[in-house]
Length: 299
Image (tube, rainbow, N blue to C red; front, side, top):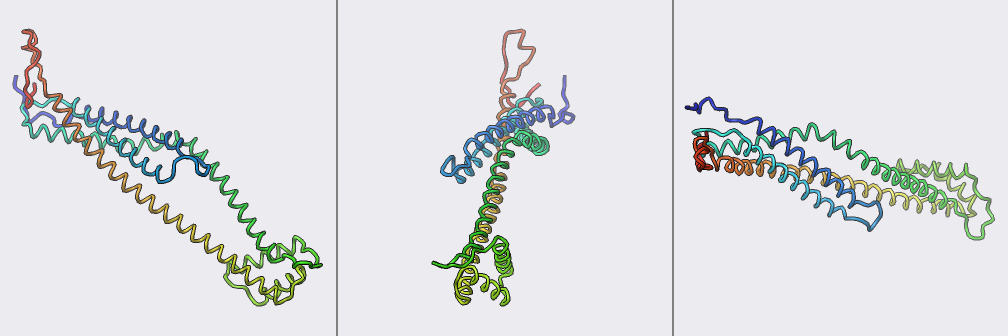
């Protein structure tokens, strides 16, 4: 019986889909494992758990390993399960096997991007909630620290002089002084009227002179502005570090995906060669011969 090579399909979609499904499943399992190992390495306590640099490098290595292992498996299955082509030159067989591996990688990558995202979000929701609780607690601590800083500046302004018999400032007076002081910091300017009024109030409740009160206002404003500048610098540095981290993560993910495409194509050629290494002929089975070796041809 003769077979027309021109009418033989060059793509075995069944093998491609099977390889892509196995690659996506293995990728999902490895990502879940990596996520679990990552959570076990992170600790909210200082000097406990792995450092951020260690976690970053480990994540990159794990993503690359996941891509290589999953894509290699998917490419191998796509090449091993494909339909044999009769009378096709070995170079064409090599190209088709490579294309099968690349196609299986592409299908599994697209499927992971579309399907696994929502699944991973559901699985990792518990960890996200735990992280949110930690962040919420940290935010509460920072808010408390900010309130304490405001109270510190107002207390420093109204701190009585040694051996002073001045009356203690009420809460309303402290709130008024704090409001004027914080407004001067936000506008980076303290008007003459506000300065004189604050100095008179401070002089009344601290027992210092008007000139000393004005000097105290200037000194504490300088301290507050320095603290605000340090906080702004820290926030900018944190934002820049987050930007660099996101950029590096995207670049390494790109490299990992390229490695996956390469290993999927490579393993597909191995699977194809193993598939074509032994060609069984029914005519030889009855005579007791197991196989004949014809690597370039198949029935």
